[in-house]
Image 1: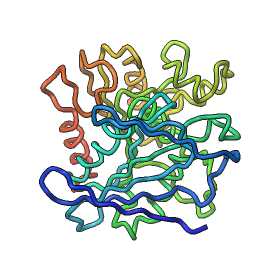
Image 2: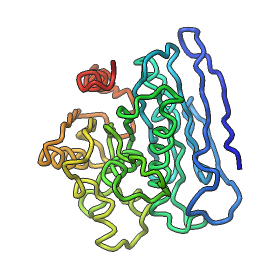
Image 3: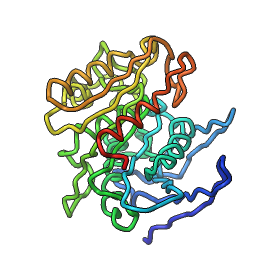
Image 4: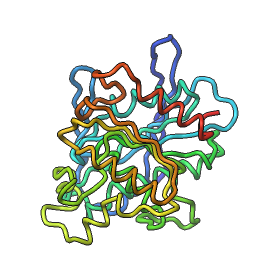
Length: 302
């Protein structure tokens, strides 16, 4: 079956057109059961949330001034592994990356569901690994530097991004040409990191690995326990008063990176709660500017 790419043009502030290309991840979706496409999309207050995803895609956002080979970031929206916050944790962020000269991809990953998957615990990871594989496969065509491909995730999307960052040697997709599935850097925003009893966001844990997971399965999806010297550098943001995902998730991952001599930057805000996207309204500080500085200092932005 031939892949279909859908191209659209969107007018954004400033008056120029931004090209978007929607790319199917697979010709045949792996680890799937025969089922109808029941995907739902709801938009309220200019925020779109997508649920029941069974057909995963990448939406590519291209900077308006392409020149030398650019860095790329794959963005994983959050939503507790039950929905995707597709705008303020997805497309809105992609447009800012374009302003910085970075090619951005918003990943619409499958949400764990026994009715559409043979093994729901690996479904999102398959899609994220395939996204990295697909971007590296097409790096020359898309004018991307294959050594500057990062992954970003918010909340449960942060769990997915950290899982990709610690499972790259364990492919859960076909990878016949042995393309590296390791992201070059990760950006984790109020992320779910741990599935341990003391730190887990139980909704995300239950949705991905069930109500009564084995201790081995909990360890397998607790990224702070899986960091090695090969884990990519990370930039983390969290609020101390986050009552949904405990701030210790970011702290423990940061400490694990430090113990393995991996470059990491952690920004903690006393307030902000959960799900604030790019704009923590409790502070005049803008973490996206901190992120831009980090990307620049590490050579991921020219």
